[in-house]
Amino acid sequence: MNKVFNSDAMSMYPLPKGFIIIAKKSTTADKLIVSYKLISFENGTMSPITKSVYQLAKFGNNFKTYEMQVPNYVTCKTANLDNQRMFVVTPEGSAKIMDHNGYVQWKGTMKYKGFGPSDIAVLGATMWASFPENNALIRFNLRTMREELRIGGSNDSAFNHPKGLWINKDSNTMLVCNTGANSILEVNLKSYTVYEYAKFEEPVHQYMKILSNEIVLLDSGIYKL
Image: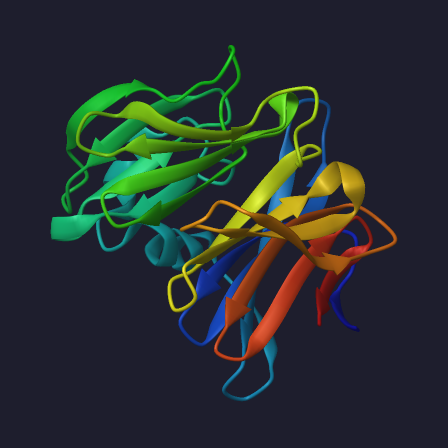
């Protein structure tokens, strides 16, 4: 593994030819200040970017409207839907579907046993969500926003505090950051069998594959596999 960024990294946001790092910059008594870095796989550079550039990448041209609608634009999870719509959910489980202008089309909750999701991923007309507190992955129907399939959630669950999700549409699999077991698991989305994909010596919180580059966020920083 090659280290890309240090332990100040909080999360990553994927781009077609790179990704954005959201990092801790400083803290005050009641506020966390973050910075944004752009990693480009085209030229191999890392450069600072502004908050607006990050918001533009995450929410699109009407990011100012989204900023007013979402309590925390950094910690919320987003997923692009059809017709230029976007699904937005907070860590507490408050969810919205918004059109390309940032207007709310649907508002509700996405929770399991009182907890919101750690991450979300869209596949067709369905939405997968990870619930680390209950060791579960749940698939929701995007038309009804109702749960239609659950994997794990019991005492013998294959998952141990699952967080980051990444869907590989070509192989119809989903990679799950199994944070409590320092591993990434691969879920076959046809048979729902689970395999170990990678093992680490510390918790892994997020995985992405951009072009041919596999990137992970561990406790100690961001690495390229």
